[in-house]
Image 1 (cartoon, one colour):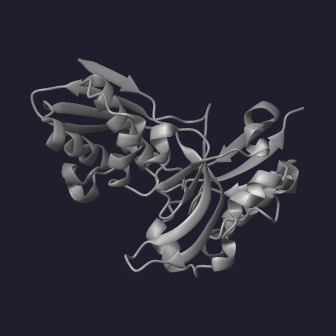
Image 2 (cartoon, rainbow, N blue to C red):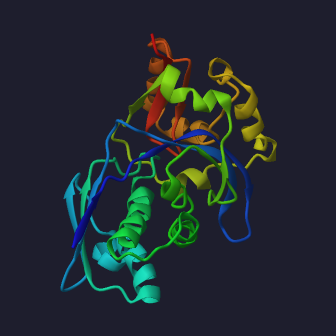
Length: 264
């Protein structure tokens, strides 16, 4: 038996870091938005004689050379422990850039959970899968649902998005994503950031403002420190405005930037 899936990336529309927590994480407010019609990874899970993790596509090295540190394998182990799964071979063709702030690794892990659930007929609801996903990474639960959702807490607390402007993004706008090939460390980005409690209220802004009024109102707190270290990213964002974008931003902690353009 096997199953083939296509993990998709996300962008963050607004990302406010509001507090540093005692557990070492940060409280954030953001809108996770799934990106369609862009680069997707290709994930195949096959029932096998032994557990394996196999990479293709973009150059990628297993963390520390240890398969067990890889998020897709961790996802498998979570379900194996509870449901006594048979061994599986995981084959991943990487197309989503690594270190771009688009959640590629988290998406792969979440889609591994989804694939195992379907392949082995576990009958887990999206809510249960999201609980497992939260144990793998802060933004992993979003990829279980893959629809626009507000993220708070570490990013694992998800709330449906009812913004009229966000609902129109696919119909009336197009999104251009540029991944410049610069690897930005999320840990280093957080270390150079000072949390700002005044950033609370992002969802209120997105629920009321039209897309044309997002510029200078819907902010990504990582842009300051990351643009300071990588000025080319600031120039890339400005180039999107020069092309006619009504809104442009960096996604996550970078390095991908995107522009939102009204369809002609």
